[in-house]
Length: 596
Image (cartoon, helix red, strand yellow):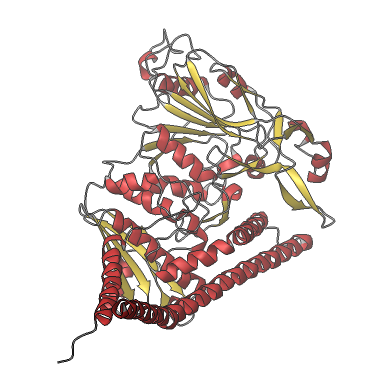
């Protein structure tokens, strides 16, 4: 029997070593992912890690997914792949507690009936229903539903899911009281549809009446929207709620455009809240409106020319999230020794101001002319904590038979008390942050263009000592679980800035269209023309965004084709040639050694 050449034997061992090393590293490090981006855009937030790791019970993530979503919308189909990848990351964090189940839905089947019974909303065309929703089923029987996912809410995906999972760790929801004497909180005329839906989804929401003499201490956070002048007994109720360690959020406004729209005439400045807040070292001028010409919103005047309207402007909080303000006021601090002051939001660099009386009856073109930009930065939101002094010197009903109907008087608060002041009550109105709103799916069907409401929700969580929830992120989410996803993210990164810019433009044009439709002035020819122009602009923005998405998809496919070609043909050929070369060199060395 012919003896096997040692050179061939060595080549075989090298090839075997190559295979073993590849299999071993895949087994050990196959699920180990490295996010080398500067802002960790592909990594779940640390708060999400904490929420998932502390889950008190097992959870089933049941994703209802039609087999061919591309028949409804290719953008939805592409997003479905991202969502599946994203949900798998949650399962990887806690595989013993989270079980991801994907239910493929066919029209007319049993799973379609199950999806509908569980509250999943169909995405309908003329001849077929499509499904793309999630049911979160806990061991204790609680079931949370995301009726359907919208690609427009991509930046809210982690926030939405982590909020629902965080609820499973809480025995009961935080109680939030809300008081709005000048703007309705219910009915078709409320300007807060989307905001109230969010509050109801996340908290136990209670409406507070101005006739209340006492605010229960089991209310975790109290929100007062455009309170203006408070009746004495109700002011005492708010004061003593704070003295007993309560948390109060004031949304005040020198000029509420929502209130102007509701009552039909512009509201007058009210100095009452100036005096109320002064007691706690917060200075507020109810006769001045803050603006920002550099970061102002673009509007069109009657001649169709684009101009910057400084009283509607954008800014960022201390975490870099985009906030949209509508004719706000501003705040200053008088540092009191027993209180600490934290700046939450301010204008970006330079800002300016204009008197309320120059705005109340003036057209926007005149307001632009009268507005003065200066070099001052203005505070738009403050958090104050510590020991607060009461506004009162005693119980206002002292000496009457009704003295026991309201809370006993406390002159100083406990150290747990907190006050937040946001100098804009229009700030959480739907037109300030919502691009579109779905009545059938009011929370997860809302498309946002600013982070206003979610900023406030995180603030409520912080004040109520609830586990912090990840903030909306404008970057793409998704676990890099396969090579296709890696290439998709690589393609996405190349167009990320362009895509973000187009997304912002589309959201802004959608918001302009939404605001115009709210005017409902169908008999006005100029109004109809503005609607048509806004619709055309929004359609152009949508087409531009779709073109970028198609380019990302095209580049991804090219990357995949090159990768397959390299791995199937070129790489094996290179390995084969390397082995042949190695064998040839070793054989030459062996022959030289034998010759000597």
